[in-house]
Image (cartoon, rainbow, N blue to C red; front, side, top):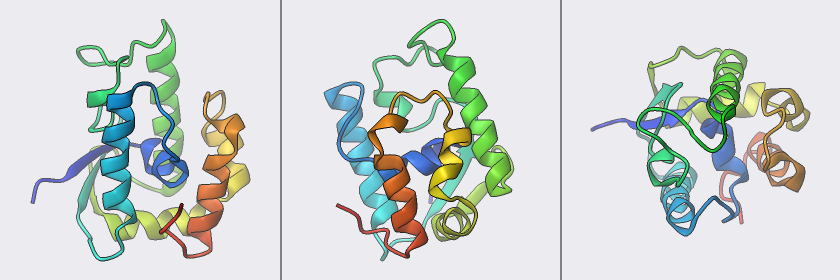
Length: 144
C-alpha cells in the first residue's frame, strides 16, 4: 500500500477542516483526505513530509516544488511543518500508521498549542482547528 504523503502541519489541519479552502478543487481534495483520516475502520501508512503533499496537489498556490501563495508562504508553511513534526516527536520523511499519528496528536497537542505551532496561519482565527484538536483529545475523530 502506497503511503499518503502529508505535510507536518496538515497532520493537524485535517482535524479542523470544515470545508473551507483555497479553491473548489482544494476543498474536494481535503474532503477526500479528511474522510480517510476520520474513518475509524481504516488504518494506513502516512509519510510525514516537509514538502508539497497530496493536499497541495490540488491547491492553486502550488508551484513546481514549493508553495507560492506569496513570496514568504513557502518559508511559513515549512516552519509550521517543522514545528509540528518536532512537537509530535516525528521524523521527516518517515512513514507512520495513521492510528499512531492520531494517538500522538491526541496525547501531545492541546488546542492552545496551535497558537505557537500554527502561528500566523490564516485559518487559525476561525477557531475550527482548536475545536478539532479538542475533539481528537476527547477521543472523537468523527467530527461534523
